Length: 509
Image 1: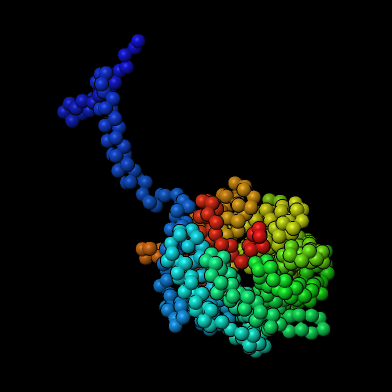
Image 2: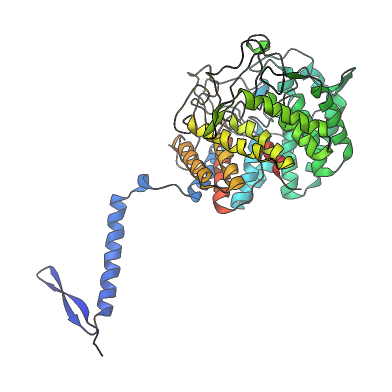
């Protein structure tokens, strides 16, 4: 039997040597521990924090820091809390314009409240839920009736969006507040939140008008106006089972169905609003989600899911046929143009990349049609449109439709939300990699000079690139950035978070 030989260190004039022996294991153990400590100390010098690769916990911490910054804008009210739309001293918009109201889902307390719900779900920290409930308390105490719609829809609207339907719609009006309170109901089970949702739905029905063509609210039929009202009533039906909301939504959708137009290249499109109100050439249309045909297709597909009306499914399909026929690219990446015109055709030099006018929004319609039909064509298009974002250079390269803007509406945060969703939807490494790339770019673009606080400065209004400010809101500002980082965190850790409103129809009820 061979004898094991150990080597033990000895020191001679400051020099370390080793000698063999049968009992040297303890000495070697001590030496290795000492070397490990010394190596760690050295690594602190040669591998500082700046070389650190971001982890799920880094995304979570950044979201917490974002909430800390937003809280510097908190305003206690008689009933609860709101947040200032702008930090002090910034050259931004007035707080009284329709898109920047204190309670809206777009930039107000409803949207910030949704972010806080997500943060509570990710951390289990009651602080964030308490703040969300304070926001809800103010919203409940200041709830409006149908006269608010009459004033907003039938009077001249000033400010950034001179479009009455948009000013009253889901992102800027009471419906967005109701989305937030329904999310709170799902988390807390408190009946007062569901009561607010039902009252908001009833007021919305009361505010509708009727003529020989059917039900409507405004002259704008896109999903940020009348189409969005229809979607809201459908979601209320899905959550409550109360049939009147679905019936009313279906009747209002039948009016929009009558406005479908034959597209020159095949399929059908909708001229959902008069874009000359915001300085576009007469008869210009938007093909994509927020104000265009793919959004309307999404609305019809969602309604088909709950009504079973074949007409709605066919309208969704022909709307997507139109979008596919005017798109550019191939299976390696596709994009749908920013705008179209029945005479001059699409603008093949302009493409948005995020939610409002880009693939992030339009894929919602393709995915919804796939969900209800199982036809692989539509799933493939969700993948190919997603690849188009990266093929266009995002998230690193800025372009005409992906400028210095980080938000959920039209910037990097919306893209991150999408890639996290696509990664979970497909389980493909391709989308995992896109998600991580986008999260890291978004994090790197943040301002965190104040310890424990983080925000983003950007040029939200594309046509005024010199106006660089920081907003707190969900779709326009920091809450949306923090929220999308939470979405990436959830995808990496398996956490379940409240979905943004656009993704509600993918929930299994």
